[in-house]
Length: 203
Length: 215
Image 1 (cartoon, each protein chain N blue to C red):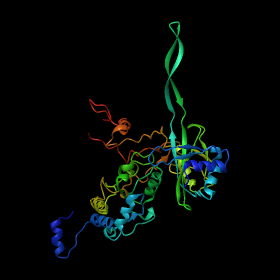
Image 2 (image 1 turned 90 degrees about the horizontal axis):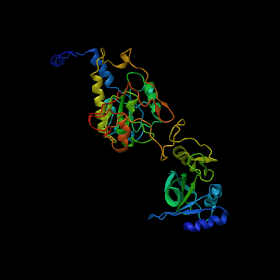
Image 3 (image 1 turned 120 degrees about the horizontal axis):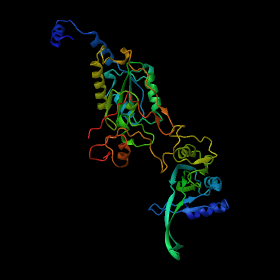
């Protein structure tokens, strides 16, 4: 890393100094293309965020791709039912690395107000790794923009070598996440232990 | 529009032997229902739709009700031998009255602008005799709604063109809206649990010292 003061001094002289990592991450974070994936009411807020007033395109989410193959990010907006959960995991598997997930709204985080419903999955982070959670029911468009910026900061801070490197540069990284099977009473397994280590409730 | 009694009389005149009963609604809405006999349900439904005065052409809602088995304890006077002497002793006998599944139809008339007329049909019991005739051939909107009642309550509609589950997946075996449905065990993370949920979540938590798990 180059010293910030030195960078600014050189910049004043017309010399632009950077590292490969900074440039790489700048390119990645500034062009995240989300997938068209709205499930319920939070999708309406997501659409509002893409419209003129809270324009998401100025942050790099220029187009929402309909195909998971061409998308970088999935915004899970809305209640994930147990009937839909295997398809969500399948779509996530079909996305190419590097891929990110934003869990938008209370339902995607933990089941939300419908948590005790017979068909409600208690949070999509049971099966796929989630990068940013946005609380709210629904979260305001500004909250989605802040989540997008948080994700951008997270990408910017990622090192390309070493333990915390992104999955697409990690040969041992998990590629495909197991798709839950719709069993006789519930999804099997109820959660993916590798992705969702049981949160400890501190009383 | 006619009152419930008048509609019943009209049905009896058009479909003889239909055996329609009235289930009264004691609430302030006063929307009493007509209880149909499953064997004549299709004929009665056709009359209600095609009659010139009633013209109930719009089926707005089909829903189900689960009446669970009731345990009735009644005091019975029985002559029993107590210490060798015949005596009449009061005994409490427990009796189980079998429950049933009920399907409720709400009908309106778009042509005459009146309604609702409410129909009810009951199955024989909740376990093996759960068939009722489907009214999809008379009102098309019953198609999806009867599928939902089949999915959530388990009522089998004979004559339905496509009786599959609607909200749950096909391999699912339970009927979630029944009274005896137990949710599957996915209560690993319940941070603000109370009452019944706390009891279910207790199995996944480690017991705290000095307190019962789940509180």
